Image (cartoon, rainbow, N blue to C red; front, top):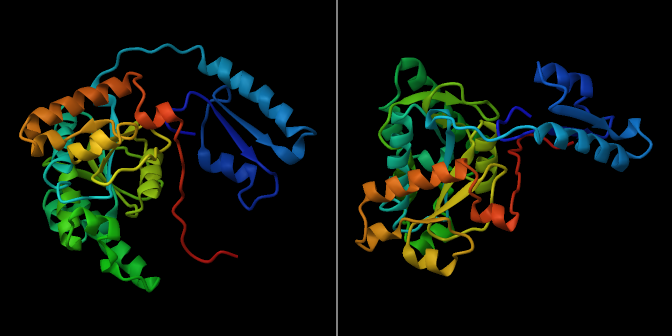
Length: 313
């Protein structure tokens, strides 16, 4: 409901959930009743008809806005990797890292998540925390996720996955050293929790799992306007926010042109440098922010996955 990409929102409930309408509104705080409307199914005779009527009102509200120029400093971009291969830490992730530095240098914000895939390389990030407070938040996030694994009798060093190994990743540290490169070299300005929004300009770290769609959903909830997703194996998925799939190798980009938005394999092919490739990615991000559709959007792929924990009654 708070996401800047959402022109208008319909909140649908059954009517007898543990999360009541009153509690929801109280936690939400101030909102524009023209932009946000509620429908409780048990309160109306025909929820489909009532829903259509409300959606017409919301569509009319959202339709009154026109696109206006804004600076890149307003952008918030999430960064995630999945299905890595031996080139992930050589092509795609360093390119995304350079992009992150470029956006941050222009006053924008980037968000790095998937905490388990920082294990073994967390020192590279912690050394860049802007102050002691942020450092302690980063330590708490890393150790908290390890304790979460232990509490569920899960082996912390489960990674790399079978797909990672097929792609050429050998150890968790190998995977992690590639993963953290997406954070570039800018200082880490803040560490935020799952479900929290980005409030500090610059590079942020977000509490989230390694699972692709769960983390991408968390990045969306944090306020990311779009997400960069590097992959050496390929995937068709798209988060609620526009998701740009960045291939680590040219073979994947050629084979899955209907999945891949950008190819960094040109670095390994010797055709371009990392800096040149990063500038191209930066230009593409601005195009997507300006309305260009990603491959996932063209196909209508947009999914949500929630991070669950604890006892299910």
